[in-house]
Length: 225
Image 1 (cartoon, rainbow, N blue to C red):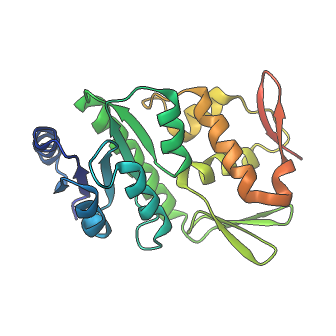
Image 2: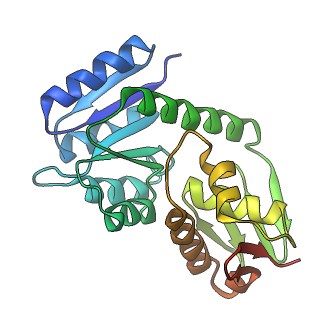
């Protein structure tokens, strides 16, 4: 079965270029030209390429709605934007976007990132029923959630993978570079600030267990042994 990718952009030329190149790579492409159409078609897709700057309902609001809906919360979102400010990237990642690409889009880079994301999804599916318990918290690999005190805490995929990597390397100092390479991969270009954003969000969601993740100044992070 072909992977279905939803391309959302109010610029029709961009939609057509992306549709042509993605179709040529063997993907099934759905299209939308505004946020409302995106929300209507999202549940039928395996991955969403979403423009940030759109009239009426922008990409940030669309992503928030997708991530708050159990039916679409696990669908990876890759943001497209003409803006190149760090604050925009941080906002996008904080609300659960998988990746962030600045226009003009490099088709080669976009295809590489899509392949990386889908490969990780397939790996996650193979581990779908695995549970990891440590220090009073349980990680559910099927639902990318953490459970403690009888409550399930949903994490974005990257938040979950970051926490999982820290736990698997508990007691060791893990540098930001290690996390970037292990969680995002060598072919995805994001900065060290991305890691700090994700760790902060993980700590917020862990509540009283947030102190299990230590910041080692100038070096990185460590999950307490």
